[in-house]
Length: 68
Image (cartoon, rainbow, N blue to C red):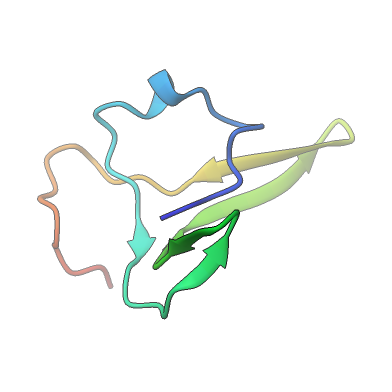
């Protein structure tokens, strides 16, 4: 999955985190690489600046658990 989150997160901030993603999307070329999914995030404005927050789950929730 390719994403444009580099403005909002340093790679080290995401190590060990479980993000919510849609993984059954058809491939889409981005920068010459196929991306086959999308990270789910929330965007809002705070003091005139755009803020992006990836949706993450509790570390006790196993990968592949159903979301409702």
